[in-house]
Image 1: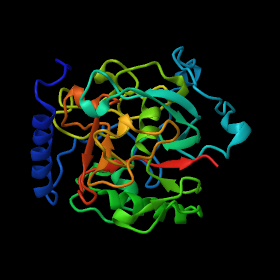
Image 2: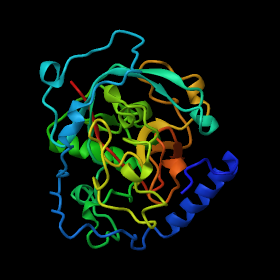
Image 3: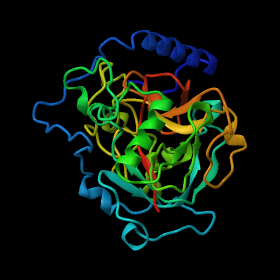
Length: 321
């Protein structure tokens, strides 16, 4: 296995990804090839993922490289916030270095980002079983319910968030629809993470150990990717979690986030709670997938898809209010 950077120009590499995506779109109605869940595994409930982070994650100390550039909240969930929702993890406010000097141009420059709003994030991405309570999905293979959803576009994701918010008697985050969608980041309901929130959580928040992948420097420990997946998606939570107890943030399935994609956005991004360009043609997706190489399941890797492209997954977030 060679996790090094592919010997392709960025234009060539994105063209390759685009070709792969186009092929996937044409086969969107065909059954997806999925690895069956282990026979000893207990199926997840429809609305929650029955996964608990190992207790060892609670004993990790904050990274020695954590250097807030401003005064940020340091209180715990029980002291300042509502109780952590079931199957979500509290990510406390903090600062981190976003991006990478080892990747593509759109990962530069490395820059300081301050996350001033604590938030909750799902331990796992949304699964087929959870999403199909909201909307039927074509061609869900037998045993696919515990796999990460890979049949949603960005509009599907925002509509699911509002549906679930209403179901749980929370204030919806999204108004309008499609390209005119607006997000109230102070609302109590479910939403997509911003790109900065996603990367901060994938890096382990205040508990970050500075890993290349979400929870390890060895992708085989934490990610389903082309070298170990046989091109198949796998049940959520079947690899090691990261420092916060989050699973599958490297590999398995791409996860959509809130932001419009901008190749040069990092060079002009605000320091506090960036939410991406005001408009654009593509939405950012993160994390890589089971069909991608090790270089594309790095935390810092950025990708994108059209707002109506129906072959992605996502993870839920709630602002801690």
